[in-house]
Amino acid sequence: MIRNRTTRPVKNTKPTAKDNLIKISSAVVYGLKFFDSNEEITPNRTFLKCKPTVVFDGTNLFIDYSSCKSQDTLHNLNHVLEDLKPGETFTLSDALYQDPTNSIETNISGTYTFMGVVNGNIVKAINETITLPSNITRFEAKNFSRIPQITITSVTNITKTYGVKNIFGEENENSFKNLGVEKNYYVEFSGNTNKDSYKVKDILTRDDGSEVLILDKKVVPESIFTTPVVVNVLVPKSIKDANEKQFDELRIIRDQVINKDADRFETQTEALARATYYRCSGYHQMAENGTVFFMPCTTHAAYEEAKSRKLRGERIGPAKTEFTGPISVDGYYPLYTTAQAAIQASPSPSLTREGETTVGYHTVTLRGKTFFVPNGLVTGQTYFEGDYYAGKKI
View (spheres, rainbow, N blue to C red):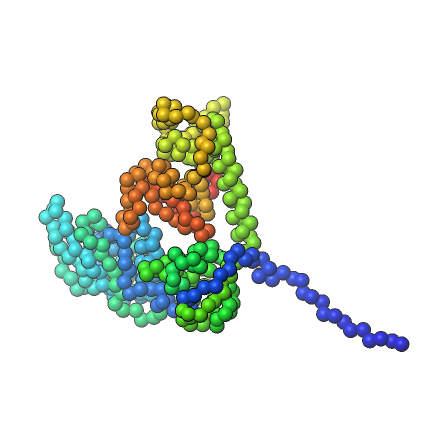
């Protein structure tokens, strides 16, 4: 007897994009709002924390924020102006200018015509509404009595931007921040209309404290404040592997710095870490038998003095306390794990940055963790934002 043979379907074993994603966290989240318009994340008013320098030439002017150190302000300014087209208008308010040295007091608050953004943080505009003093064409930031604010008065088009807002904010136990969400990670939602996984293009914190994830594809607008939504956070395997490799390298550097008896190092990172131990700043280079190495402190004389102070005060040797930095994460350097360590490494430990309240340090959040950065460092020289790896600026 001949039996019929049924052919079983062959399972497709080809890996999919999701096979390369690793789930790192999951939680039930309330207070979510999905949106499909840039209007949701672009406030009419900027709430700027920096004073600009304003330069006039007849009716033309530039509002210059290039000296602003508040990344939140620059990010907010960019989003406010993103939908503003040349020829549309905005209002500058709180722009009372007082220069006692030159006996000048005037107010340049008024409505201006937007003409574009130059070099990322200089607003180009035209003045047709206010009368300016004839004896001044440059308004220094330091002489504004308050922080001038920009308010949008006309926007003809609204850009499509897809995202989700967590109204509870980053301090909530199940916030996106506490779940470890980062750029280029994926978030997966279930229990709502938008049952899908989305790549995170950007992460914003609004002025009201709420969190916003900008997503890579279309979502259905819905406000589900009281509805529980399961949120899974997934990391591409390539990113996870790179992160683990970097943290392994940091642990190696930490062990080398703590346990090394001599003060001669192969990288700037190690020398700067040792400089923290001596409570000096920077590093310098030395050469011996044709080999160049790095040493703590900006000069050898400063190193000898710092080492002498350390000898007079306590025994020189490997620190037996917890390693607090400096370290580099995602090209940001120097980062410390405690505020006190950042203050001790700061060349200006009593400095508070404009628009901030922390004294001697400020914070950055990377990979869901808060790190502390000394105030008073120079960007591109002693402080790097995303372009510092393996002890070198790239």
